[in-house]
Image (cartoon, rainbow, N blue to C red; front, side, top):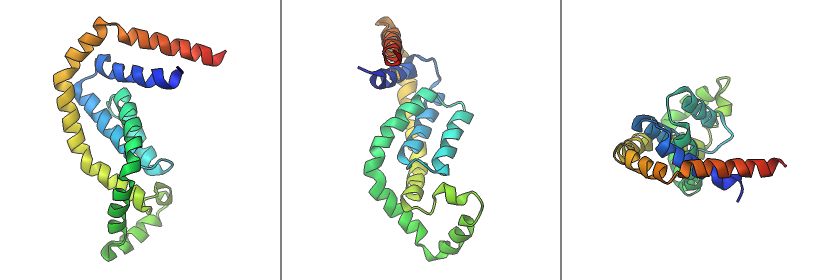
Length: 171
C-alpha cells in the first residue's frame, strides 16, 4: 500500500494520541468541515484554510475532516445550490451583491456562484453543532482511546509504514 493510505491513518491516530486539547481538535474538525464542504479553487476556501493555520486548531483533525467532508460535499451540492440561489436571486440583495462583486478581490472569492455561497452558508450554519459534538466526543473519549492506541503502539507502526512507503516511492 502506498503513502496515500498510511498518511490518513497516521493522521487519524495522531488526532487521538497527539496530546491536543478537545477544544483544538473540535475547532480543527469544524474548520476542516468548512473547507471540505466548499468547492476548492477560490479565495473563500483559501481564506478558511489560512484561518485554520492562524488559529490553534488541530491540523490533523482539520486535514482529516476536510478530506472526509470533501467526499460528503458532493452530496450537499444540490442543497448548497438551492441555498445560494435563494440568496443570490433575492431582489433586495442583488444591488448589494453587485456592488460587493465590483471590489478588487471579490471576483476571486466566487461568491457569485450559487454552490460556493450556499456551501459557505451551510458550513457556517453547521459550524457550531459540529464543533460542540466533536468537542463532546473528544472530551469524553480521547484519553481512553489514546491509551489503547499507545498500548498497541499503532502510532509508531503507522509512522514506520509511512516512512517505508515514502522511501519506496523515492527510489
